[in-house]
Length: 126
Image 1: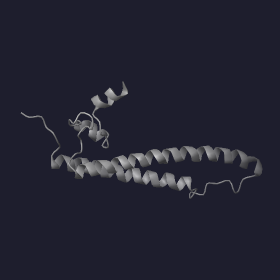
Image 2: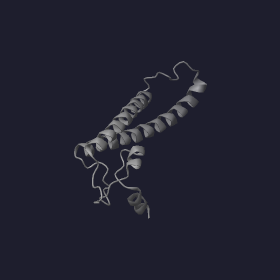
Image 3: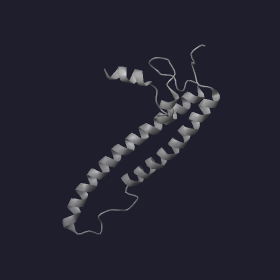
Image 4: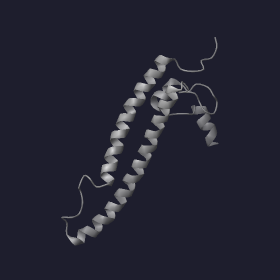
């Protein structure tokens, strides 16, 4: 029996559903991080005394930097998921970009934006 070279349309639809669900959650998290960065939650130091205000502003800056890093990471995740949806449309989803072989379905269910098989990923770390 020949080795499977791509996922069936039914399998691709299963992956599409997984990706869309993750994409919706990721977008919600990203929007919440953006609101936090832009201080739309209004947890600021306007009503605190000047002594605490300096400390609060320092902590606020660190918190904002960390939130910005999280937002950037979340955006990269969203872009990866969107790329996976494009690969589903092109029927190239699940094909390792290094080896050209199918990435196991279990890996794609866990990491739906994966473009490398475990073997190719481990090979790249050496």
